[in-house]
Length: 170
Image (cartoon, rainbow, N blue to C red; front, side, top):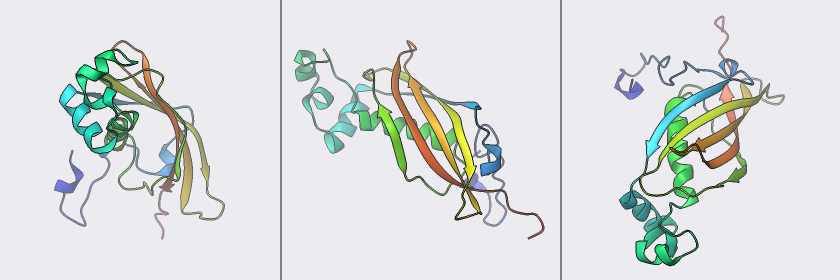
C-alpha cells in the first residue's frame, strides 16, 4: 500500500508497515521483524560513491581490483542508506515516527559488492515512555543486514522517538 494514494484526512496507515506497527505501544522488546531485501548493482555503487564517498575502491573497478578489497565495494554510507530505506518501508510507522537522535555502534563487518542482495532484520531491544514528553516513547532497535551468503554486512543500534497511541477519549 502506498499511503500517499489515500485522500488527505482519510489515511489508513494500518498497512504502512508489513507488521501493522503504528504507535510506540506496538513495538515490543524482543520482537524481531523482517524488513525485506534489496539488491545493489555496480552502477548504483559507483553512482552513490561518485557523489558522496569517491574513494577508488568505491568508484573505479580497475583500481578497486588492485586495492585492499580485491574489487569494487559499496560505501558503508550507501549500505546504511539501502538499509534505512528497508526500515522506513517495513518497520517505522509513518503515523508515529518522530525521528531519531542517532545511531550507536554502527559497524560494517563485511563489504557489500556489486550484485549482492541484502536482507534486513530489526529487533526491538528496549522501549520506554519518555519522562519529559509523555506523548511519546523511546525505542532502541538492533539493525542487522546480511548478504545472500548470510554474512553480516551492517549492524547498528538505533534510537527512535515514536508517538504513543492517542487516548480515544481525547
